[in-house]
Length: 87
Length: 247
Image (cartoon, rainbow over the protein chains, first blue to last red):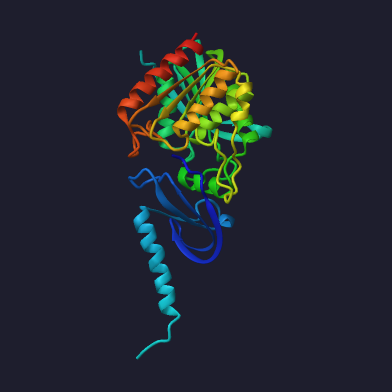
């Protein structure tokens, strides 16, 4: 199927694309056909900066299990970072 | 018969008089030739769809594929352009119709054109081929696994597309629909709704659904490729256009 489902979020940070590092301003998240991954559907994230043009993009296409693992790892890392440091 | 051809990137006049990039493939002979507007899938104006465009020229048609994402991303790589268009909600229907009209007009202006023009589209382009066939004076249209004709998009997502099944009454030309039975958008239930709606309005159409095939079964470089469905589908497309577009 072609899901068309696309979620948008604004964010700040930096990404490294084909032309090097650039500031990120947004991301789109969608579960749909990949361009490169050999799967019928993948969880795709485009980290973008529309103000710098369509080429200002860092793209990933992940199988669903990998995407969930990544999401959990991100949350875990953030939770760990918020804990008091121990000697 | 396989026709020798020339393929090139050109600029055509699209919706609102905008210049739009397009990929043209045309047989080398004097004609007369029918015309096919190729409507690319959601991943964009890519190598796979250019290959499809050349295939129609090899079969004796003037084939033209407008870059529907040209306005959002002129000169960008197809995947970057598709991502930019998606981030902006996709192609508005009114603009799509204008771009297909521009492509059809350009085909009619080519030396060797026989005056007949059809459309073919895949995935989102299948929906857009149906939309064009309900909006423009075309001679034939093919819709390959057209999603979002019957079902609305999820409410949480800001998209420029919505259901267009209500346009079935306006279909102006013969329609060929090709579907995979394992597809969920359009699902077999969606196909049944389209079938019923077109029959109710007495339209000239034929539908074929392939068992063991899902969405994008024509895409040779994807895991969705199903050779049996694709080969049969190509035969049906060629016979259909041969009937309604060839001289």
